[in-house]
Length: 606
Image: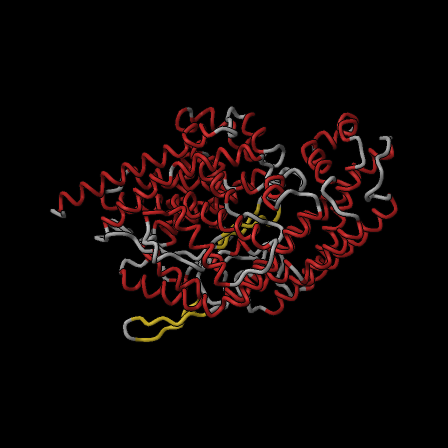
């Protein structure tokens, strides 16, 4: 299947188009619902106030508020996903961009209403409320969390101003990054000819088997980022300053403390996770050195990180579909049915093209439906990415019966199903593969794990340093580059050539450019290691695990991470669990090293 014939997602079953009467009516109905909700809040005085005694009127107001809010949030999710399906696949779509901006104006108002609801709950005796109201009991975690969050709110006028200014502040800078980077073209000399490729296409060349191609793509990419560094540095400076300012004004010790709260995670869990992961740096450096040896190199450069090894099987999209559906069926009929539905109903946009966002993601649309964006490559990596995103879709399926407040899954737990599904596919692909293909699959898996363990921690350290220094002043592009290189040298160490790193990863990653999602990095580490630990339990007792797995996914918005995992017999606040998960990766590194050594001995290599 050629790139041009790869599937695009089908949104026509939702609305005929952005300019259709049905969509415009739905959008206007949402705006009217938000306005009506604001009027109702005013009538019922749902806003910040001094503590009051709980009476039946307060209980009824709470229950009605949640019911009304849930309906608006559910509609907003569908419409925002629908609009973003056009923006993310064509950033030059003026109608889509304009409609998104229009929705953001009203979403800001809805966000302010949510802040008012949080402040109002903060004035209640929430334990008495939970005791008296079945609705509150069903939302006990969200209610208690709102009570804690209320203590970190500014005054109502300040919160209102912050929400309004965000549209021309953090949100605007974030949109600039997404639009600008999706339209960034890169000139590259290939086979004696100058080619102009989108940034996503150039970055895909990091997987090319020819080192000269990888190096040329890397150098062209760095040159393109250099030409874009001024506006991107301005965007990053502005977003981090906004987050710092609001965190301080809301009484958080740091943006990290605020992120941990939003992630339903505590500091002991993060410390335990990081301690175990940093212990594994030596193992990943060993993996990188083995890979260098397999490539005939003294040491890997950055552009060798994704170099393929072994016998690379070509995975056409149709083959990927068949394989994923079949392997998901080995776990459960429900998971298999979800995958089959996603392919059959065209939930997936797999075709790389100009103005389309790079990478991959999954969006919840409505009910049990999701939409998946990928930039598919006919390799095992492409298959693994599809499995990962379908895991997110399965998680959304299990959350479908929950209210919008109950399904608010933090990033830490949002990667559970996706990484689990990746593992299902990897185990199956390795099972009967010949040695050369096994090397390729294992290397691709370790490559991804190295990114999540080593590179993620480099990104975490970079972001922490930026937040700390941004308190004092703006940082230049040169300073961002220096901080990025320092973080990479700390983490990759002797595994990579220190003179051939990637100083512009701060420009590449959209995760840095979000004012409401700081530290969009360590949750991926949590997700990988948590899912590996879960998979080990699945292998120990498949029947018992299957019986509880869907319940776990359905509950990810109902408790903080440590409490939720304890319900399933897992303790995550000490390094032991995380070390056990990393042992799975160490075993893979050992196997990879043995296979490479055996291959070189058989071929007579030194």
